[in-house]
Image (tube, rainbow, N blue to C red; front, side, top):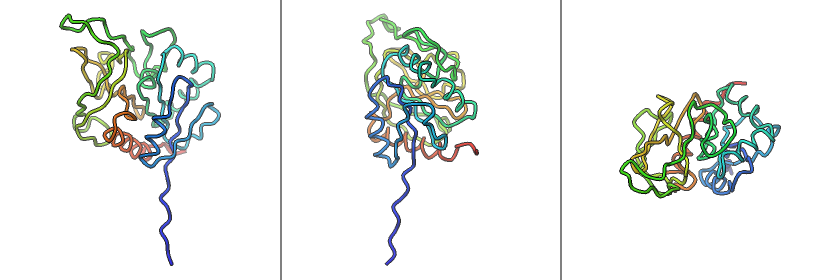
Length: 222
């Protein structure tokens, strides 16, 4: 009797900078049929799979981890090869030049600054920070390298990626009390998402699935 072999679960290498709980990211990757491989040291990178750079916590602490654990040259090496890397929330902010949250130099993949939400909105009313809410997300056709219908995503952040210096690299933008910020940025095969796909339920699953399928097809030849 012939039986069908179980489908191969695709591997995603998840960089652990020890800046916060990455459990929800790992759980979501398993839910969409992937095998997350947590990488704590640069020498553990296989460099054969898509790479995910999550992050929760303080920018300066994450930058310190980049330097202390020699992650910066390893990640820059991926960027030089135009490797498919997805940064989530703090991971996306680390892709930028710098942050008003603290000292330290970001990776500089996205030529912009991460800024703190002001205490008041453009209407002069007090701004409740952090920005924590569901928001509509409707990427224009062809904006992302994979198809995504309109939906809703979950944000939880006090600092935002300034879209003005990014130009066309700011693929999608959102608004908080009149303040525009980048929700998805892209340079080459590096993508940064300010929202949390792992907390955005079915839409987040669809986003990560779309990214994973695209990333697998985009991995550079050896």
